Length: 256
Image (tube, rainbow, N blue to C red; front, side, top):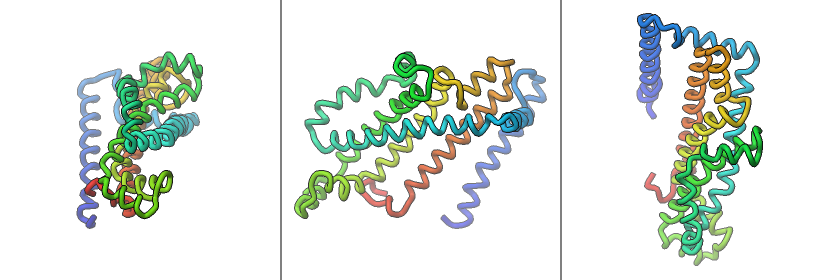
């Protein structure tokens, strides 16, 4: 990316953000609202959270839950999706079950998660796992199916089979499409952890929003929690996009 395009990519979002902040500030002043906080009050709320020593522990708790559930879903979902994409019998047997469970919202599992694991990190990690697992399985299966058969046959002619075929041919070939699926699954996981923390645990950014609402209607902290969720979600997406652009990952059969 040339310098002018890079500067444009930074400045334009900053200008939009500044315009939104000014509009927010103007709306609060001219509506004389006593409920919705101004940007200054939200900024003071963030400083208050940092001063109380809960800001970074809450952020860390949410990231830990997302990271744990997402990693577990990746470790199990990628091999399962690879098997389903490679072997028609496995897809015939397992795909109906995946398609039945996939549309069920992870939040619908909250009562069962609490029964299984109690009000602990495990219940939230379980919900994150469910939110990530099925999209990863489906995206992996579709990526494997998209590999031209001629390349698999050529690899087999050179003696690759089983785990060696998967590690040396299938995995590198599906990486571009797989990383896109992982990025989308991570976004879903971040959405779910916030909702799950409002019910199943007593820490994290979701809990912060609920606690601020119930404890004196601190809407400055509510909005602060919402903005933190958005900023961290953006950072996670940008990080995944940068991984997708790594030169050694930009080959394959996705047309990139």
